[in-house]
Image (cartoon, rainbow over all chains, first blue to last red; front, side, top):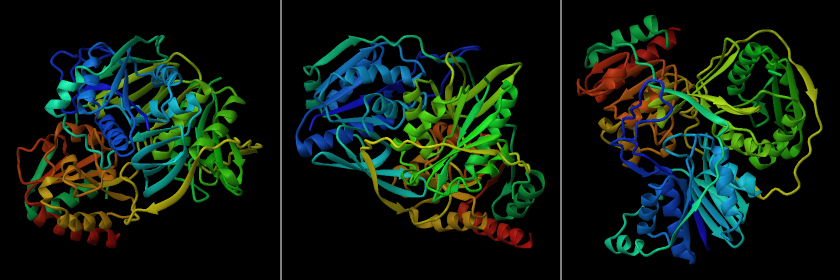
Length: 248
Length: 328
């Protein structure tokens, strides 16, 4: 079965973000960019499904020219084709979802995978929005799934346990961490990626209706204190939690 | 204008406590905008009985839609019903709790009503007539102040970030007829409860988190003992290293690639404090760190630290807290 994976290029999660006063975006200088960690799970899930059942995996991203590098990495890992929708992404997830839905509407794939959220904006919204715009069912926070005929059966990680959801295809699934650790690209894969198709199209995003007015660093925490060393410090810690912090 | 709608969350036919905080935030921002707060309660038959209690948390009007098809709050069904309910009144803001359910529902509703959505909002106020909305980005390494160029806007609010206000007021309950969408293409076929009946880490008011310093999954009973001594609102958390090693499930992971949390009390045990972990828990009210290494970065964000071996400190801490709570 043919599968689409929607992905995003984001700063490495180990990055210390920097910006200037009154900034509305981070300073990208010297920042390493990676495929968003949850999108890695979606890519691996797609690759395994297509290996088991046949079919092609196409990766799609909305982003700047540099996103080609991220798409090539996905091709190196085993995806068959890539599409770059070139445009400047904002925090307005619905604007992004509209562009993606417009592209997906023209395609035949029955299963569309997303990472549950992107590692930069943490909005956790584009997957279900795309599904809703396309009138397709969506399961989010999925740790594993299985396609059986016209149905995809998903395990969702929800508060207090696992919910099993069945959806009619075509459907949208957003992946969280499960057993889909992304494989390393082989040298052969990296070489092959150079010859795989990567389509570039211009995307019309329009002005976002969710606007970042400014970024700030989180408030510094007041200087803490070391209560003491080892077991002997426990009674004093408990006293402080009760009398000073008043949290127990 | 200026009216704010809070979408109540229910499970097993009962309105969940996260709704109280949500309604309180709705009331406070509606007051600032010169409007009133409404709550929307959807569920199976009987969910509306007692829904008027949301008035005590600030809802002037409690709108109730009852239908057997809404019992399990299947998101596809609920999203359609919420979108219809939203369209019948002019709202400035639609608020969801940023729980697993709320984060799943909010984007669907936003797409249906063509409204922008800000997720996981940690501050929502009106300052000199202007809406102030803040949300963490980059896993909490930065805070973005955002504005909307459209109304209504949809927001999901981080749990535990707003607090509750309680009074004796009763909300005016208004029932409306629910139209269930005919084509629903997803079905919940099974629910497997997790072994521990404890509260989810993203909603807990106390979190006991363990890191690599715990040396192995087999030592988690020490953390579980402390958690259970702290009561029913306490949950276990874990660092990324621990989840990557397979010692604990990802659902417990705190940090940029896990959950971002803001409990009243956070214990970091054997956690050194990687950037991405600190980002996920630094807005906790009180942080306690227990670590062998006095130079561990976790001590820079901790209010109280004990330098020492977790295996010695934990049993003593559990015993002291148990003793304190039994006095109390």
